[in-house]
Length: 297
Image (cartoon, rainbow, N blue to C red; front, side):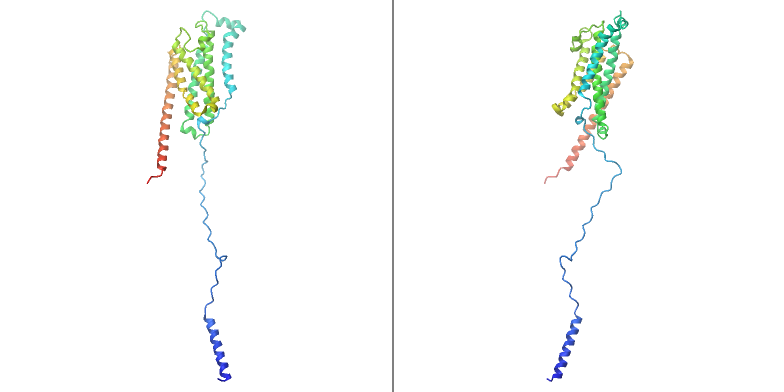
């Protein structure tokens, strides 16, 4: 082969190689881990805010703290004692005209004071029980004013005790019934004037004092013991009601009888309503727990 033919053959081969290279597709770039992109995670859905404010559940009644100081408790009792002492002993000595009125042929001032203070004490005991039953209801727990009702419940109970104590001590000045201090303070020791019915009132006063004092010792006796003592409030009201009906000289008055019927009927209604609400709530909670319980294979 001549040199001319060899050169031509080399040129043809070079041209064919160039055409073949131009006909091949470009090689894809090798993907690197850095070049890969990770799809973004979907944004969490945010629940729309409600237009209504969130109401925190109220604190149960047996967890509320007393706002009436212990000194106030003793101050009310001492006020009743000193008030009765002033009416019986001090005022007649300081005011001779009042002494002649109180110690006349038919003295009735002490008797009137005793009867009127008894009505006030009974009304306060009824109101205290009504407030106590209301604060433990389902509706009251949803209201932020529960502590206010609790304070009113406690304060009316303390006032009822003070007026009840005054109701008994003021009789020391009545010359007709002629009670001694022992007869006033000792249950069923009053003597001739309806001792059974008077004794029921004396018992009610002591049980009410125990209940009122339990407000201040609850951290030491525990919630369970405090609740058991507090249930004695029903006994206090029934004893006071029986005392008023059996020994009260105003029982035959239509207004007084209406007061007894209204107070007893209203507390009975609220108590039954409270029991029904409690049972309904307990059954609903039991159904919820049963539905949430996992089924056994």
